[in-house]
Image (cartoon, rainbow, N blue to C red; front, side, top):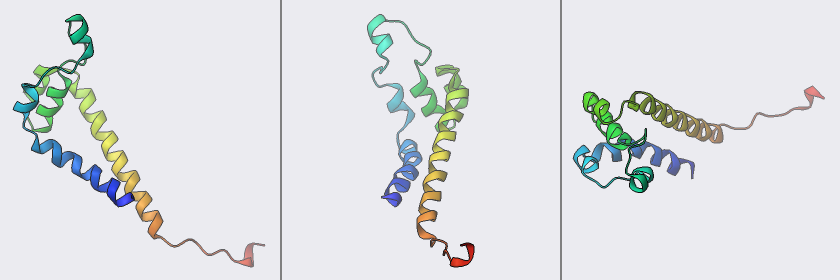
Length: 105
């Protein structure tokens, strides 16, 4: 199960790289606030901004949503943290348990 989870985490950037920004930009809005009230919220455009930033189009990402400079690194940090945590868990499972002797008694 651990290797499957690590593989899924590793597949996230590959999947994101495979989705062109044009697909994300021309899709329907997912913002419930905008759909209900017709106004843009602070998060509107974040999906497009993250997609543009992931594909190296930083000026375009900035135009979509200025908060991408905060949200992008936070999401990347969370992803790295999850990968490291999963890797450490897998390594701990492979290491043998330390032998306990009667010397400490």
